[in-house]
Image (cartoon, rainbow, N blue to C red):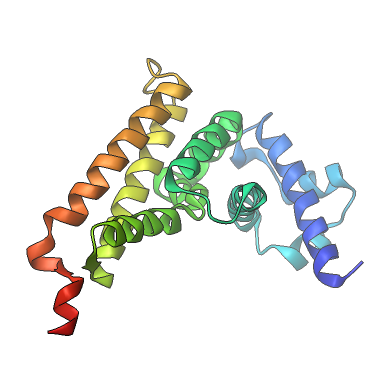
Length: 203
């Protein structure tokens, strides 16, 4: 087995054990000793791969979501990413809530967002191409962050139980509908300030 594969396997084992512990107890109660004891490693192995438990938490959520998305297909759409993200959050509700109590809303939001910013940017580029418009890099960055933050924040609020009237399917439908209309409107609405028709490139 190659070194890279062994490293990933070790990290994955630590992450899997960590997630199982998160489902049983608060993040603040979990120790490195408890993690390594449950997966048969030692503390030296843990600290060789991770700086601390926060680093393990970040790796766990980020790599788990990225790996699953990549396994589905390379060119996944924003709509598919939203559907996956909500489904993943729902299945990992206990672990996310446990982490939330210790690391706070903002830090958790950025950790579980994963590649969501990239998918938002790709959707913006796709709409710009459809409309034969050029969008500035700065405005594209703003829109990517804005919509990714909005989706991630909404899903975390739902996971926390503050939107219990919404089923998973209803939440997914609402977010996708808003993204489809709002992103298109945002790209088109700033044409005079941020966007120029492609024909103007040749002037």
